[in-house]
Length: 323
Image (cartoon, rainbow, N blue to C red; front, side):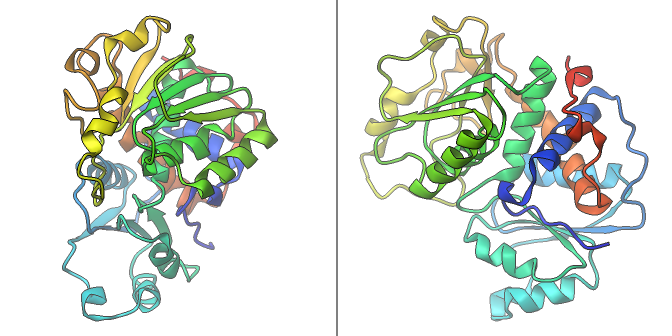
């Protein structure tokens, strides 16, 4: 079997995207027992940046699917002494079946590891995109609403790699609306906006980005935010907090969207990007969202090693896995 890689959401066809989402939701709902699709396989977990949810999700998910785990710390590999990513990938591919890596850096490094056809490479977060977070978000939305097509999502906060992945993912679903409210100077990159716009034009989704909090529309199904200080990054402007202050998620945002759920990729800083009464309130599904990261990771690992996208994606099913 030729290994399949997930370094960007662009590596997934629409069928792949829907299959992984539906599979993760089915795992989450307990509708699909983990019957050992990774029995006898070895998954390497390499994180150069801190991680609570993603590292635990892939480690626990791989074990539940029957794989063994080898964990590497940031100082464990000869990459630190000048060995190339391509050589590292060639060596790993002869010993591992999957490498899950968080670099918070240039995705070209991940592509270097993926320059072979034996071992799958999964991007657990690079500087530009957090694809597995977006898959977790889709899984959570499908569990919550029974569908993704036509949902309306408001994202408030920095246009970071989480926001980028969310835009690239939701733009693939017909009728879906994503409105991003990002601080001036801290929005999506032009490259991500162009990619999302192309997908939206093809699917019939709507992606808009504004750099103020005035004149908001209502009727959103979900309100989403991310912490202001993304892992592995810093702000060049010492006064950045004043720029971000109007973009705090407060209960006022529910005035025109009373039924919206609240989502957060975590970790959260109460009193900064979100008020405590929102994160800990009755509309918050942020911790269920975190739990779904493991189920989504299981679906990603299965997709990487299964060789097929499955009929669930092609038939656009998913209603059966809703809560």
